[in-house]
Length: 114
Length: 110
Picture (cartoon, rainbow over the protein chains, first blue to last red):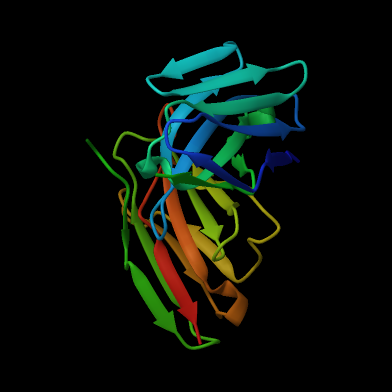
């Protein structure tokens, strides 16, 4: 099955700096890669996603890049703000053989220091 | 904006008891899921449901777990005989173009 590795597990940045979180996946059939933000005690909230026919996608301060050949994808947050502090999860989903389950990484705890 | 809803928000039960967790997916979605998150850990896939039957399940989803869609709107997860290690947050999700998660049910097994 799919295996998703996520790094780093914790990340501290100064307010205004950029944050980068990286993930790798194992199943070349995976073709959908969402990123979720989870605040303490809350649900995972979709913040951005990318499909395998696209190399990069941007939404205001958030961007995601995908390298299919290397099987890795990254989340970039620019001009970080204290409210960006949360746990971020990457995930991968394939459609091979009708598989539509999301496999999550272990999460990155981002702390933005004011 | 439509949302996935779940009830109850918190369930406390004794070991060995049965629990039923309830979810109302977004109405035009076709895929439904249950995920589990043990405190401080990652979100783990349990089961997916499509066209009124289980589509996939993980090794966590053993014989003590079952899912059903009893009335065309609710989607339930039943744990027949709860164990201490079942204590976790259980998230329901439904997928149209993308998966959306419900707010979760915190299950505490004593």
